[in-house]
Amino acid sequence: MTATHDTPTQNLKILHILARGLRGGVEKNCYHFIKAMPQFHHDVIIMDNEGPMIGDFRTVGAHTTVLHVLGESRFGFYRSLRAKLPSGQFHKIIVWTNIRMPVIMHALNKYEADVYVHIGNPVGNGWLEWLQSLVLPPANTIRLRPVSAYVQRGLNHSRYYRKFKSKVSLKPVVMPEITAREPAPVTSQSILNVGMVARLDPIKDHSTVILAFHTLLKEYPAAVLNLVGSGSLLESLKNLVAEKGMGSSVIFHGDVADVYSVMRDWDMFLYATTPREGLGGTIPEALSIGLPVVATDLPMIREWDRTGMYIAYCKPDDPEDMALVIKQLLNDEARRREIHRQAPAHIQTNYSPEIFSYNYISNE
Image (cartoon, rainbow, N blue to C red; front, top):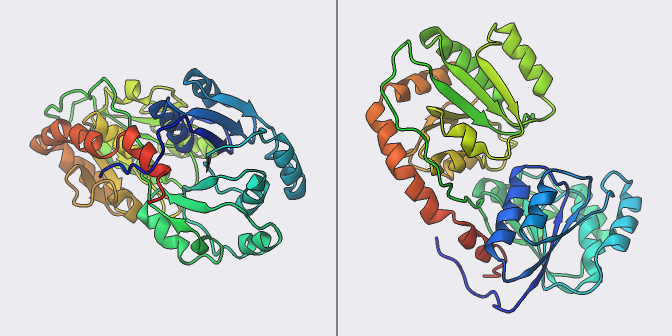
């Protein structure tokens, strides 16, 4: 993967528009984009409320403003957004969400700029958006940046989204200074640490991971499952853990600013999701520190490792198969050591923030 170079070298003014300032994947993408391009001027607009990433944006030099408009009705949202958007002109505008996309695109008619829209998850048929765009037409050139080929394929079935040009843009990965601990032999008495990093959201599949871990405990009773992230499913997942009698073996860490500091002591990274998710962006973060991964075999996950060289794939929505694949990988110390040695170089070569950022605003 190589960067394209049609982006001017002058001090571009770039406007970033985000729905929220949470510590999620899209906010981190924006942060890494800004940090990788310090030669440009960056303005960040948060449409909802305060969040933990706002301080991070300011730390890397972005002028950041919170508008508190996302909760308004569609018409009120349009009026407030257009009134509160910054004055002046921008060379590039990145909208890191497709929430209320036709309304936002029309509000951006106050500028003359190339507009790039992040598409993070599969889209619907697009009829409502198409009808809105007839009333609220955009004036700028709009290009879509789906997070995976899986998401991009779905755009062709949407009445609204298929009219825009699109280019896949997998997430950037910053190589951490730490490395996961060296893989070691395991026995039934080993204190294994496994975990998943993801929002506790219905588009993920934490229940498969939890139930697979329940099976794993029968053979490795001292194992610990670490769940990093917060979200709407927190209580229901805690209830599932309690129902299975695993309260002392499962740790809910909540949001963690530095996930690598938690993952560095794990023996394996687990990831299960649903077809409603667009990418699975914490998987390359685990690989970047040499952590072996077991993940459900879905198209968007395959885009990180098509041949299964670094990821051991299991059947989707199948806790028993996930548990079986976990045990197979635990018993294959040689493969775990190979992943530990080679996966970081694979991530660094293909997914650097610099490559991501230049390609994102390239029109080629």
